Length: 441
Ligand SMILES: CC(C)(COP(=O)(O)OP(=O)(O)OC[C@H]1O[C@@H](n2cnc3c(N)ncnc32)[C@H](O)[C@@H]1OP(=O)(O)O)[C@@H](O)C(=O)NCCC(=O)NCCS
Image 1: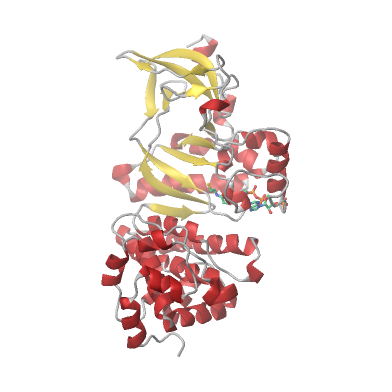
Image 2 (image 1 turned 90 degrees about the horizontal axis):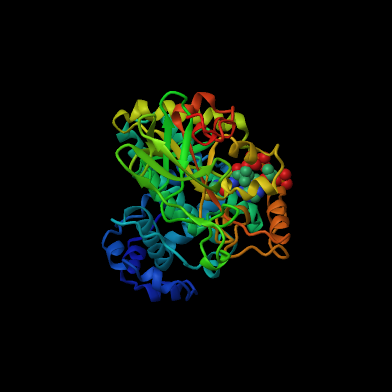
């Protein structure tokens, strides 16, 4: 029985130190990270095969995760290999413990792929740990009283992570990237769910922009965070040397009992040099640090049609106040390459991403040249238009734009939940500029 683990294997696994475990797998890389909290995970290692490596459990998890029976053979083979090797078992448990059980977030980083021992099945070593999220997530969602259909939708992230591995080849075998495992932990302890095309995490706003709404007209005005430097064309950079001396401006926010003044942001994701003052009698703060929001996350899978996004946002606007009435969110927010203002220059106006952007209030974020591009190219570092993959239209559009001499940066966004019924009407762009600028306040 390939999934049985003998007492001898467990006992031997317990005696291994990180260096010996790696060596026994024919690997040397990643020792410093693997050594972190090794003894703690060892002390909690079960006497029998950990549940996530048993066939009953991984089979159920892959069904919940949206994967078909075609992956069973490789899962069985890899779980069997792990359960027969003290070193692989010890490392697998350490990985699982670090992702889900460690008291503080301590995600594994820079570990080897274990190809010396597992050959082409190497990505499945991490996939078994990734699938292990599902029983923990189910337990957590049950405690919160979340309907099972939402748990099932959320569990579909397993399939999305696997698709990233399929996209890069790997002989058509499934797997997961180790750098995505750390994120799995959030599903086991945060109020974080998938509703249709998008995921939402109920959490306080943690940025410094200030957003106000006019009490009678309903218009929205957003101020850049105090102290943020803008280039002449309203961009923000991570590296100070990207700014030209003497050009641009630095945002300044001043608040009194009666007024707030600052530099307005344009909903297309650029800063404006315009400094305006809003009377607090007419305008009220609606989004600022500490206010409860939904942090949006975008699972892979394409097909982000305006209809799919609208349906998801409407669902979120009803779901969270119903389940968490004491923490009802006021806005959806997100930081991602998907909200980069550069995309409007790269992609057609008809693309799903540009159409989505136009419904939102885009907020500038500090551009570094590579932000978020791992999700598009599955590569780290600064993009190279000559050597990076050009398999999809999105990849080609971004690389061509960079090759033309442009500097890539990601972006952020907010969308006020009060506006959910009007999603599809480009509420922020159509109301720009706010009346306070037009002088008819
Ligand atoms: C595809 C994606 C980039 C945009 O969705 P979309 O524009 O509705 O995608 P579509 O289904 O219309 O596909 C448009 C093109 O993008 C390609 N594509 C799909 N997923 C992709 C991905 N993850 N990376 C690169 N290109 C992708 C499609 O193959 C298609 O290319 P083609 O025209 O050559 O056939 C997005 O939905 C996605 O899957 N992103 C990965 C997850 C992510 O980045 N999350 C944010 C993390 S911060």
